[in-house]
Length: 91
Image (cartoon, rainbow, N blue to C red; front, side, top):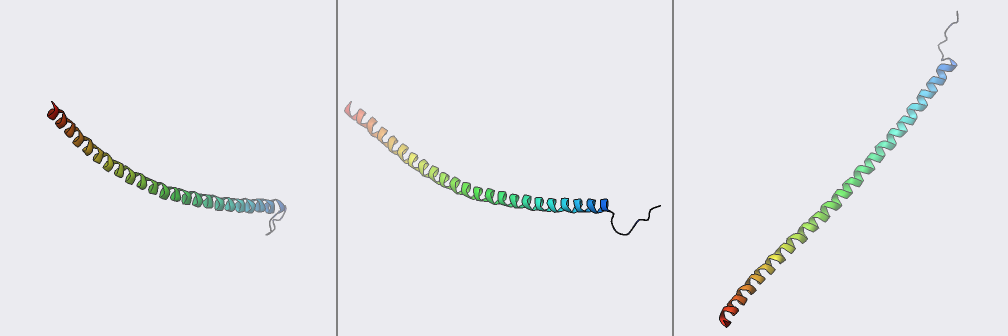
């Protein structure tokens, strides 16, 4: 019967090296994945800020146009009253 030594056999050493290599590759892959995720989150945050600013500007422009429309409608209404009065006066 063969005695088992305290040291690894050659196949055990190879298996351990493969395991360590796999763990190292996995660690590097996980680091890259976390970095990509951080970059994606930062990009999405910058996009959200830009879209919020653009939305705010559009809302302000819309409010301004609504005020302008209301003013035009008041003027048209007054002009209509003037035309009707003129027609009545001329008739």
